[in-house]
Image 1 (cartoon, rainbow, N blue to C red):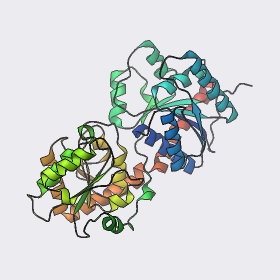
Image 2 (tube, one colour):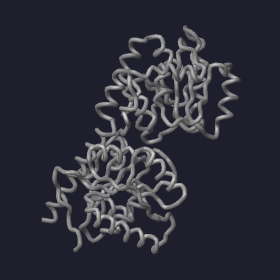
Image 3 (tube, helix red, strand yellow):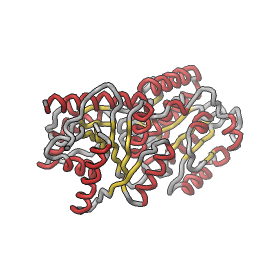
Image 4 (cartoon, one colour):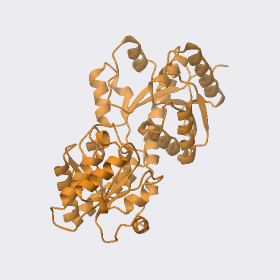
Amino acid sequence: MNRMAPIVNDGPLSILQILTCRGWSSDAWAAVNLCIGLIEEGHRVLLLCRDVEQGRAVAKRARGEGVEDIEFIEASNKFHPASYLRDITLIKRLAHERSVDVVHVHRGVEHWIVAAAWAMGGGPVIVRSRHIFGAVRQHLFNRWLYRHGTDRTVAVCDKIRSAYLTCGNFPSKRFATVMGGVNAAAYGPSNTGASFRKDWGIPPEAWVVGVAGSLRMWMKGQDVFLRAVARMDRDRGAPAWALLIGKGEDMDNLKILARELGIADRTVLTGYLDSLADAFAASDALAFPSMRSEGTSRVLFDCLAAGRPVAASRVGCTDEIVRDGCDGILVPPGDYESLAAALSELRADPEAARAMAESARRRALEEFDRRVVAKSMVSIYREAVQERKEFAA
């Protein structure tokens, strides 16, 4: 018997999350954190990843984070009707076997596959997350997809939501915003960072500013960060230490730049770390020197959860995450002098920095924790399920 419209109730939902990115990215991080939050809230979650090497790497990382129920689809990026039919057959079978209430997709290819699976109606609710600013092209097929083939579209910040509603004739009630998704419990006030400082040769009395992200200066702005730390030497106080967490193409270039700026002896490059908690606990302040919009960046939520004030570039949705003067200080991207001034301000006024840190931590717990985010998403799911039920009646 074909499964008709799902029945809404207050019990656990059965949710199929589909994530077809080819590597660990902000999209993958957001989807996996949502999966974990939903599981922690008592819902049943199956994650589908792309059946290629990089997709399996995403699945491995997801399992390591705590998502146990994972399967694979082809989700070909090339026009491949036979492959799409196999994926549709698999998805419909899984939806029937698991009594799926909601299929949540995060990228274009799986969005179309799922919409095609139930193009004639019925089936689970379909929800799409939008992680980027790129506009939806206004052709006939996309108009059908977002008006009729999708029950809800969830943007990761209000700017992205507004951009879609401004550029397209889409029903506003079907567009929502849900931000965040950090494991706030991974950060705690009992972690002083003392052991991290000892392991990495950072003096206990040093004032340390940390930055995390892939080492790509053209995008992440770590060179601007190092120039800002060097510029702080002209301000009062002992020289600041620079802590860079991550790996990438510009590791050697950043080492060379630190030597040229005369701060190599107090610049620590850790490489990739599985957890940011110890490194952030060892920092007095944090920086987010990105050069361009990344939509929403995971590391900003981690900065808030760590309870540290952050000096951040005003790009993309940054000002929706870090409130200027409340959780940190916002500066123009690429402006190392403004970044240096913001960091110097945080160093010179410990009371103000502490108040920002407390505000940041409180906001991470109350608004951005992954269980809070999961609850917000479940409300959207249930609303869409109820709407579908009423329409079917």
